[in-house]
Image 1 (cartoon, helix red, strand yellow):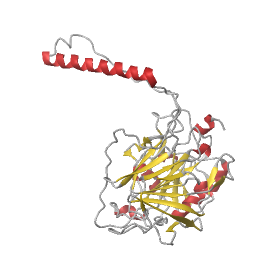
Image 2 (tube, helix red, strand yellow):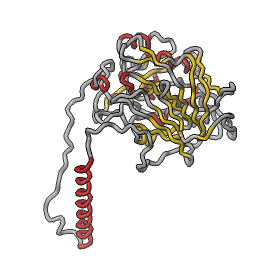
Image 3 (cartoon, rainbow, N blue to C red):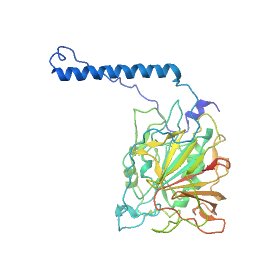
Image 4 (cartoon, rainbow, N blue to C red):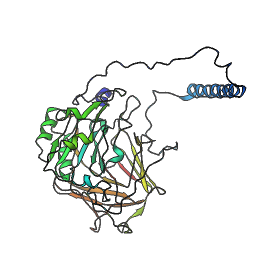
Amino acid sequence: MDDEDLFYDESDHDEADGPRGDDGASGESGSWFSNLTPGRRKGLIIGAVVAVIALIGGVAIALTGGDDSAEPVVTTTIATTTIPKITTTTEPDTGPAAPLTGLRMTDPGAATRPALAVKIDNLDTPRESAVPQAGLSKADVVFEEIVEGNITRLVAVFQSQSPGNRVGPVRSARTTDVHLLPQLGRTLLAWSGGNGGVVAAVRATPSIIDMGHDAATPAYSRDRSRRAPHNLFVDAGSLWSRAPGEVTPPKPLFEYRAKGEKVVAGNHPSIGVDLTWGGGAASSPVGWRWDPALRLYRRSQNGRPHEDEAGPIVSQNVVVLVTEYGQSPADLRSPEAHTVGSGEAFVFTAGKVVTGRWDRPAAEQPARLTTASGEVIKLTPGQTWIELPRAGGVKPL
């Protein structure tokens, strides 16, 4: 497979970008400068001098080392650039507990709605990128799975919070999803199609309610400021309004610690984890680092802080399930994660890591996380990212 195959997925319902308008800039002329006060003239002159000095410095840097064609950075150390402020939410004192976070819900009306899973693009290369995504900060759970070219794709699951009318970029499904989603119960799936085998498998799965581009076209829109196919977004509220009346909330995937309850015995202090996916020109290494001040894990990708349109991506928990991959029966290029079975687990929560096992006997059941002694590993209430790397792709720190 050549690089072009990695960047374009012909199974998606993509459409070519139309012409892009030029940004027009208008200037003014005349005697405006002479009409300014002496103080304003002096300020403008000083500002212009500073700007010229900065421009000269920037040109010098570009001539001595800037190269847009350089290989992508592969280190997963989080960059030391200034990170935008992270907004945290306060859990209400009363209200129903969200099944996928363990937190009390600020919107009791959302307690009865089903889970909405959205397939989200995660291509991130110097040539083209889906970053920043939209809506990830509002997800209860995010799965990260490997697709062709050792690129990863995200399955963001929403229920307790609404991500609003812009979630994406939405991309195509894989046969991995057919086995991954039934653990949530009947789930709405937002996706942009797939090859014939994938489409048939998705539509034949009783627990998946098709809310893809073909089934709910009015809920989707193209952002013409972005390059196709990384520009398809969906309105979450529109999809929930189309849900069948008999659907129920998702099943819990994890158990959560009560307030003041300690992390299970056998834990070790940990600053986080580095993850790799198998290498390749478009494969993006990931890092998670514990921030003790925020009591959250910060995510990096390709050595840079990973952000969506709301700001830096953070999570209360990072659950790493070492996963075998086989070949998808629907596409010889595409790997399929074997998420039913068992394997090694690394659970990062509250600045600790617990090493144990995951066991998932059937697609309709979530993975059970246990220590070597058989104790259940409970999580911190809040958002959870579930990472699905192959063996050898995990480096706890």
